Image (cartoon, rainbow over all chains, first blue to last red; front, side):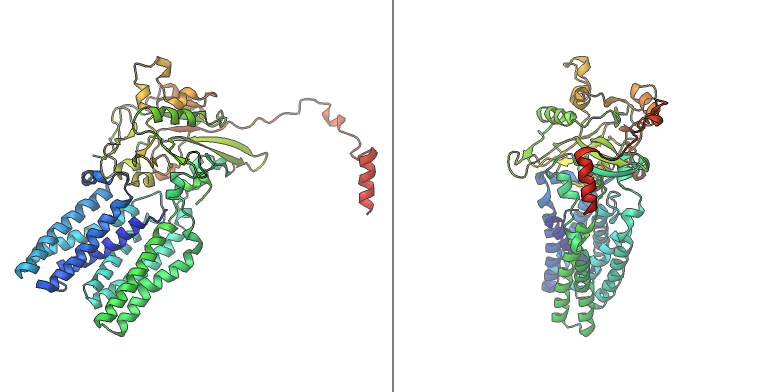
Amino acid sequence: MHPASSVIIFTVASGLGFGLLTWLGLGLPNANGWAAFWYYALGFALAGGGLLASTFHLGNPQRFLKAFSQWRSSWLSREGCLSVFAMAILGIFAFGAIFLGANWQPLGYIGSVLAVLTIIATSMIYAQLKTVPRWNHWTTPLLFLLLSLGGGALLALQTSLGLILLTFAGAVQLLAWYLGDGRFQRRGTNIGTATGLGDRGKVRAFEPPHTGNNYLLKEMVHQVGRKHAVKLRVIAFIMMILMPIGLLMISYAVPIVVLALLVHMIGTFVQRWLFFAEAEHVVGLYYGKR
Amino acid sequence: MTTLPQTTEKKLGLVIDLDTCVGCHACVVSCKGWNTENYGAPLSDQDAYGADPTGTFLNRVHSYEVQPEEGPAQLIHFPKSCLHCDDAPCVTVCPTGASYKRQEDGIVLVNEDACIGCGLCAWACPYGAREMDQAAGVMKKCTLCVDRIYNENLPEEDRVPSCVRTCPSGARHFGDLGDETSEVSVLVAARGGMDLMPELGTKPVNKYLPPRPKDVVPELDILAPYLKPVADTQKGFLGWLDKALEKI
């Protein structure tokens, strides 16, 4: 799949933002006044900024309001609705904490649940696609959730929580790579079933429909990233999981946590780029490509 | 709502005969022509006369080589467009309700005024049947020429999809695949019409008729075995050359 920068920024930033907002809604940390302001400003900037970035790849972004209408069937629509609800509820909660010194905790709990559901809905946009076997698995939402909550916990300076969650995220990431690697073959979709000609002999794409490029190939048959997949996996895993965990084991001091967070974010960008670049869409079979 | 209808009254679709398709791409050209000039945003091209031309097409013809266990390979031309699936994954993923499947005839369409151009439906389609138009920023797909098949301003013989009307080898058929007695359904039953990627559970309406087995030419002349060439060595100059080169 084509790793569009808008979608990478969206999933990483919004994931971290909603992860942070989840902890803030739970009262971790239970901040008031200016301290609360900076926490919430960061949370809303990341969550909202990510959502805004996601509109950059749209063909007709001016019609975005219509995207809130199909929550009954579409994960993308659900994601939009849930994100707005989460930000609205937590916005009220934050207003109380910042300006009134109030602690409307029930509202915070509701907001946290909505933020978690938003992260799950985002991941389900990808996990629902049977056409991309690597994504079409329960490890996808679990990994998105653990990374968001783990990174969010670091942002919220809940260091022990972050340490535990990142450890689990690392385990799920390894599992996702391990299980994802052969899933395309295991699902049994190949050029034979794609053309229906597989039982007659060995099928080979002889001549493509056109000599140039097209939307399908650009969008869904991205092969560049896979060449360096192993190296990028190592880089992503070290920066996203191992280095932050190592740093946090040394100290919980704020500069160390900030450093761990920065390294984790860079690692997550690499991981997310690879998440798209490595994923193979079944339509490539028609072109004899993967 | 972009939920799918439980059932559709008709299942209009195409039956494509892989035995007779000659791979001329006339259906591709006529599709592009009709759908650029009629319903919805035109099918645009980018850098059409430059070094890297691309464009939006609703129908594309692939060619595959099939090598059986024994015997020569076979070349099969393979037109591919939207299969108007009963369980269309492209419809349910749409966040705006722009994608829908019609209750009355099962055609899957895009309401271009509601499409935000997110591209998720193209990701959800296993067949590559949807292409985002780069000029209009909306998703384009086969409409089964919905603006022809019910169009009473056209002569009756033209009230079929443009690709079907154009096909010079009669490889494309249009009809109601929900009606067991329709010509297309009879054809599918007789020829063993098949689904593409049935394992993905999309339940395509369009069917493909597999190529008929190649004829095996029988030995017609009973004297043929006795008339085999007697000598298989070259004579004359070539024979001399063969012997001379053999000695070196």
